[in-house]
Picture 1 (tube, rainbow, N blue to C red):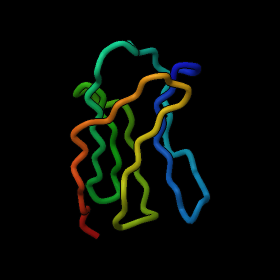
Picture 2 (picture 1 turned 30 degrees about the horizontal axis):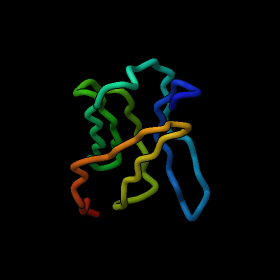
Picture 3 (picture 1 turned 180 degrees about the vertical axis):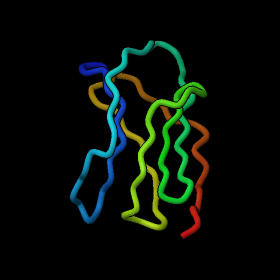
Length: 88
């Protein structure tokens, strides 16, 4: 987020968005970052450049999908996004 320095994990349940975790952090916008989303049971984690950034327990869904997004950035590219099926 170029305007506001935030990393966030959200849950979308039928169009109702709930903020699960957030972290205010400055980061270098002019380099690539490795972002990793993990789901192990009800434990959801976000790693940035190999460093744990956010972690939360959420038992709402047994299986689901991941979406990545940005806010107010001129240039954003996502690469090497594998299609994953998480066990339910």
